[in-house]
Amino acid sequence: MTEHTAGIAPEVTGWRASIPAGLRPYTEAAPVAALFLGISSGFPFAMIAATLSTRLAQSGIEKSTVTAFALTFLAYNFKWLWAPIIDAVKLPLLGRIGQRVSWLIFCAVLVMVAIMNLGLADPEADIASVAVAAILVGVAGATFDIVIDAYRIELLEPHQLGVGSGMSQYGWRIGAALAGSVALVVAARSDWTTAYIAVSFFGLFAVITGLVMGEPARRQEPKPLKGPVAAAIAYVSPLAEFFKRQGALVVLLFVLVHKIGDTLANLTLRLLFEDLGFTNDELAIYDVGLGFWALLAGIFVGGILYARLGMKRSVLISLILMAVSNLAFAGLATVGHSTWAMAGAMGFENFASGIGGVCVVAYLSALCNLEFTATQFALLSAAASITGRFLTGTLAGGMIESLGFTSFYLVTTVAALPGVLLFWWMMASGLVDRSLGTAGTEENGG
Image (cartoon, rainbow, N blue to C red; front, side):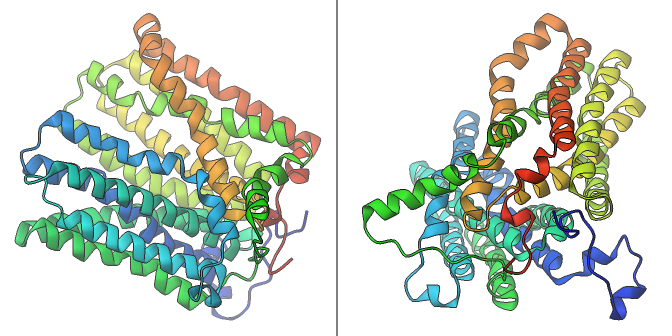
């Protein structure tokens, strides 16, 4: 593994040399580009999440119908199914400017048109047309995500993956928050159609970034597809390449289990808060408010840890922190209704999640082969959450009823340990290094 993969950046000269070492990586072109890519990635999700729910509620749509629109997010869970198309197919005409940039522009246009179409649909006149329009936004947004993730990974050098992941997450949250806010403000002064049209232009952040940065230097051109057999081979090649690596099954096992404890805990927090009798004001202050700033701090620290300590140590630290954070909820459940306990639990949880989100996402990025970046990252990111979500949906409620909240969160802490121990063993045995893809080892064309 090269020094860059270990997290050691090249020598810095010029004006950037006067910036503190911890802040320096955030001023590099590729991580800054990741910020703007994240803004475009976050806004379609916001348009079919809280914003659409608010619009439907204001139109007098019944609550059962509003909640059913959560199904529009399924596209984000299954985007890996069509990700190989983005890796293997070169767009006609537009493809001349580059595989990734052309798909970036194409998908941005799709998202913008889909969101405008959703704005034109009238919930009061035809709720079915709104549902179809929302599904189209979900599919277009998920496809946009595939391209943005691939472009980001290929644009960043191995030593920049941590900071780049952090900047991308900052961008995602900025994009989602700004898009939701702009939509509400414009709708209040005009109408929802105008609001959706105005917000659709957030897609231009990614387009402009792609045009300024150009095709990633680490991008590997796809092989021409000649006939259905070649197309079928191209479709399965990303998966086949991954499983040919040494220890691929162990790595996949880690990806599947490392977030079980964290997901079980996080998806049941609202039940805990309700059981302890926290008011909406307290939730707004300590969960949403304090949690948001703690998360931003964690993302920043995560990027620094990855750059200074390297991938392996930063990932291990983040896994330990995320496991320990579940103990904070066990403590909160034991203490009961205490704003101080809630502040401590939510602050530590979001700080740990911010660090983990950066370091683990950077590790998943490093597992990708540059020939199949879009497909492999879509697969790995989907696998990272599926086990915890399945267990939460099938077992969490029954476990809470039979064990109580304190014991439940102790169980989630124990459930996080296999991921910690498995990654520690992978480090000690050298498997982490041997199983990395070219995205984590090769620089500028490698």
